Length: 240
Image (cartoon, rainbow, N blue to C red; front, side, top):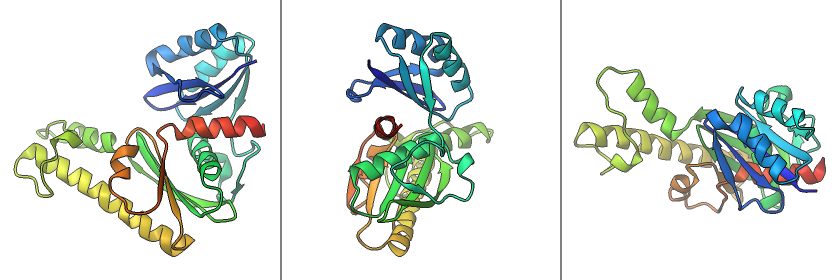
């Protein structure tokens, strides 16, 4: 029977059948509650592996269970392909667990900086012996643009496409340069932190909707996979 992988994010839910994770179906959060269960039923799914970071995911899981579909909700108590040395493992997000699982599967022989660039950006650190030692969480690119617009009275809503040069010469380019240059500097800081913490031979694993932006900003060894969470859910399905 096919197994459905479900990545429930803050703005959308992505699903794919395990073994075919390049064939992704995306549902906006407003439609996901009913549509995910319908999709699972049409595919003949009896089991799902779920990464949930948004509260509406509870309704999705309830609807799946009402359709007699078994749900494995990923937590730190799931069988993992890495050692979790997080101080509060119960609070470690399923999206981060899935991304780390994917990273270890992609590059098992090197220490890792795992960057998942979505609504939030997570920077996670994994040692050569597959021990997760922790990481940091920061606002994602779009969230930074939206916050600057929403919490000021006159600044327009911009995006990275308004970037013209390192120094802006109008309001939109100034905002775009400020945010994108800040993200680039942030990435470089974490690269240096990874080097000092993990060693010179660390690799960067990039995922999330803005992974392409980050891939262009680094000269370190990288492995880029936009759908890092779904890859990780596939790994965790095999283990659980």
